[in-house]
Amino acid sequence: LLLFDNAIFMAERLFAIEHTMESAYWVAQSYFSQGDFAHVFHFLKSLHPFTYTFPQSKDFGMWYWKVLHVWGVACIKLEKYQQAEQVFMLQRKWQQQEQYSPSPAAQAAHHYFLGLVSRRLRHNKAATEHFVTSYMHNPFLFSAFEEACTIGHGPRMVPNDIFNPQVGMQYADETTGGGASQPYSEDDNGDEIEENTGMEGVETSSSSSSSSMMGGSKGVSHSKIAKKPMQPTRKAPRTTASTNHRFAIHPYPSAGTQPKRSKLSSSVKWLPNAPTTQEEMVSSVGVQRLCQLLALLGDAFRLISLYKCPHGIQMIQRIPMQQRNTGWCLALLGRAHLELSNYSDACQVFAQLRRREPYRQAGMVEYSTALYQLKRDKELSALAQSMVEQNRYCAHTLCVLANCFSLAGDHESAIRFLKRASKQLRFMCYTHTLLGHEHFVMEDIDEALQEYRHAMLINPLHFNAWYGMGQVYMKQEQYQQAQHYFLVAIKINAASSPLYVCYAMSLQRQGKFAEALDSLQTAITIQPSNLLARLKRAQLNLDLRNHKEAVLELEYLRDKAPKESQICVTLGKCYQEMGHRLQALHCFNSAMDLEPKDNPTIKASLDKCVQLLDE
Image (cartoon, rainbow, N blue to C red; front, top):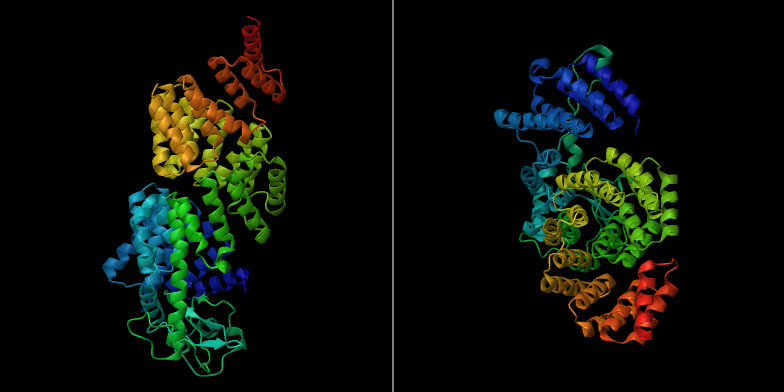
């Protein structure tokens, strides 16, 4: 009922009467639920070591594990990662010494949070091991799978093996204590089947303290009583126990009705040992469908994390429509188009996401980046205003505002907003990369390098930071170092056409023209609509005196982008070197008409062409 204040009050009354590990857990859990993590941290720190503070009871090991778990997660919330690591190591030490066997769900959560701590402390190898162990204990812990993909374990992961129906059924059997089968209820039409599957493995039995609070006698544990509702019954269900979600996963199983009929006898042939009861058949099909869905979602996320975005987009198209139109899938699809530099497609997907879930913050930074690349200032301003109205202090809102001000040319305001965002989300590498871009525009090279390096420390696979480092060294004319950083970025994201263009420019400045042409050809092959790659190839052919190839490229570009003055200037120079002075004069005049300012470069080229015609 979310009555946290009252929960805290009653938990403290219980702790005053019964000074036990269980009552300490409920005090810590109550404050944690209210978000007072500092109180949890200092409260439990004052009671440590628990083995000397509290008497050893029958369930001491279970409550000791739970108290340490709450304490460790509170340390993570307070960004006290070294203390969190020490707390979780105490858990492991207790498990080994006392031979305590927590449930699979509890072990999965333990390794997941240890993985987060290891990642924050930049122990990526240990973090990967913890995340893998986590989803091996609990195949439904998708967050651990996401984290493992993010830090580079994706090539060694097979989603169909991780989210295997048989593994899921085994986990459900272990966590429900003897079977994943749960009663279900049919709807009025008899077509939809609803189910409750117990997935939470940590027991939460609590002592009945009402008698002790009233008269001082010791409370009776509810752990024995709580086992009875776990068994399937054939009594009529309570109306509040029904659910409308086909694959709903509840922390505790509940009793339901015996079905009148079943249409699933032919749907469970995939199991080696076919279920024998109606409830087992329903649960088996539910777990199978959930695992199939998680395998599709996991494969799409894995491919996009590896920057194999075309394959990731194809995988997203295989996801059922009901799931594909959710905010998570649309944000993932928009991110895939953004990584491929398909900014228009990315904007369409993010706009659809905004219409369906206008309250969603995740993915809006990428949406603002796509709008920034397309120079859609009005849409970007509207997005920023909308997000400010929803939550002006959110880090995602601050990043969107930064992109909005940057597009307007106010880079100082953009830097101010990004610094505020980086303080909120210290481990969001994209914020530091954007901050590096802004410092680069302001020609503050040292600050730009610092932000790019910070982003690379958070996530070594964040190719945008490597790209930013390459741009800095290109500006400093250290072309060999720039080539190195561009090459690393390409190894991370080999499907990015702009990266090959930058890499080609670093090669060209070193005089490696043949390799530069090959790199530009690769960029055009990946993205034929990349006009910058074609323009750079035309300019390189012009420098190499390959006038025919340059003219063909430039004529194509002029048809595709007739309002670009730089294309007309380059084409005019090419015609001038070929001796076609009238055509060159026409190109220079077109460039002067397109350029709103009095460009001295174009004017000098035009005057030179007129002088040659007079001679």
